[in-house]
Each structure stands twice: as structure tokens, then as C-alpha cells.
Image (cartoon, rainbow, N blue to C red; front, side):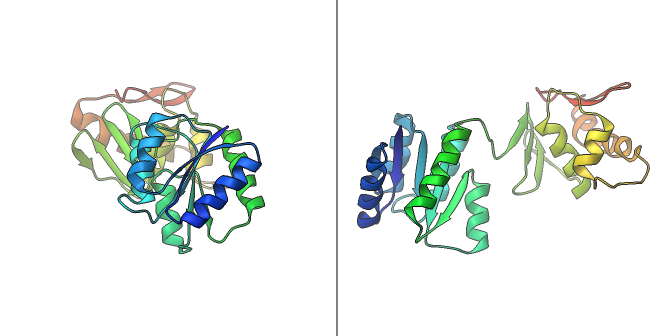
Length: 225
């Protein structure tokens, strides 16, 4: 399997290359963000090891660009920064995992194997259904160029519908995933929030993305209505 290492610390990059090759991987190395982005675009990799602090283009931006281009190669961020907001930004820009330097080779290999097993499946950072967009990181919803103002609970209901777009979800499914499992209130609360969402993301734009299927539940059209 081929691995891309994007790391500007020459000693670390050389050590990673030697260690991974000893484990049977073929390894390409880039020392700058632009070089790493170019290699990731031009070749297929089982996983990308991506430093955050890089010359020319940060690891955050490399990752964000690849995901925007629908390149879903698993990305493991490597960094000396261990703040929680650094980890949050890495994951919100599309990284699959995060490892703080210094790290052991055994842990690195275990994390890599887990990502390789998962494979390059689509994991978009922004959910899309036609021109309806929902960004979980920024809590932003928009129809085309128009930002839609919704409450946190409405956002949670819409996010669940969009993650299951094209599929029917029952009222109980919505309750279990948006409210607590031990919710004992009126289950018709789901209908109330679905109605609110229709009034905000559908009707003002002459759309009908959120469907009610009598006796079955709800479905958000994959094309956004």
C-alpha cells in the first residue's frame, strides 16, 4: 500500500519513511503544503500522514481542499500542537484522526490500520442536498446563497434528515437521535419541528424537500426538492 507523508521536519519525515517501508508500505514524502497537495491529487494513497504546520500551505488547508474536491483518502493529522481547538479544527476540516507529537510507531501504525480498514468512503464536512447546505462545524444552513436562520433543535433535526437523505426515517428514529433516548414527552413534537423546518428551508424557496410519508415517517429528498 502507498502512503503519503507530508512533513517539513526532515529528520521526522526520513524516520517515518524508513519505518513505514520496513512495515511493507511504499512511501512518498513531501516537505511543503503545495507539494503534498499536488501528490495527493496525482496519486492514489491508502492513507495520508499530514503535518499541520507546513511551508506554503497549512495542513488544515491541504485537508480542506482535498475534501472540497471530494478526495476521501483517509487523513491522519500529525502535529506538535495539542490544544483542543487545534484538534477540533483538524477534524472539522475533514481529517479522520489526529496524533500529537511525539508519538510511538506502534500507535501510529495502529491508527493507520484503522483508517485503511475504513477506506476512502465519502465523509463530507458539509452536508448537501441539491442547493440545501448544512455545515455542522459552523452551524450554518443555506439555500443557494441565502443563509437560513434556524434554532439549535431545528438544526439537529435537519442534520439527521440530511445525513439520511433519500431514506425514510420514522418519528421514533428522529426522537432517538435528536432527543434523549428516555424522552417521555409528546412524540408529536417531531411534527412541530418538521413544520418549522418546512417554513424555513422549503416554502420560502418554493421547494418541497421534506416529505411526510403517512404511517412511515419522513424523507428529505436527495436532490433537495
